[in-house]
Length: 189
Image 1: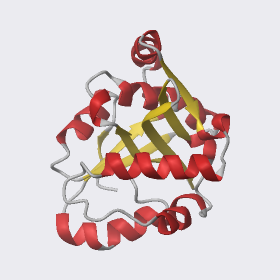
Image 2 (image 1 turned 180 degrees about the vertical axis):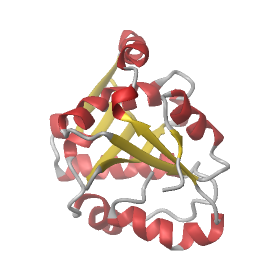
Image 3 (image 1 turned 120 degrees about the vertical axis):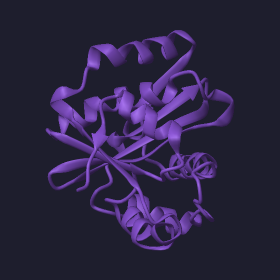
Image 4 (image 1 turned 45 degrees about the vertical axis):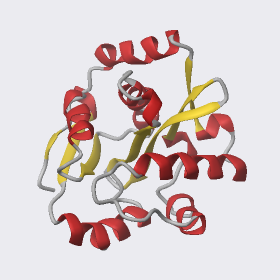
């Protein structure tokens, strides 16, 4: 979900809200998250040679921000009715230069040195916000999205958050199903 950062609010209240009209809004009660059940996805991916690191661990450098932008742009292309992606300068302004940004909330899946997936979570008053979860096409279907989001729960718990929110275009069935599998429920808020 992208709504809570300046990037998300602009996107949601702007062109995408007009195009899609209706979003599937989901929320997770952190206390009810079954970490043990989903840790198997992390372990499985690691046994296949993947590593999970945060942007804070890798280094929140200009080069890594550019790599995150390229990965996010590629993965976002599959979001129904997404439209043109932001320029790099717009992305920097809307993703990194906002109070909700924390590099500890950006999980990167790596295959060797290749960035193959990302799950970005931002901090907000009273909740955390799953901004974007995406995996490069050649790596999909292996549980990487669930593994990244599970790995990212450490940051959410470290922040003391009790809720995680996200939203999706109603045609993004795979993302909606993944979040529901993890315990996210529909919300009208």
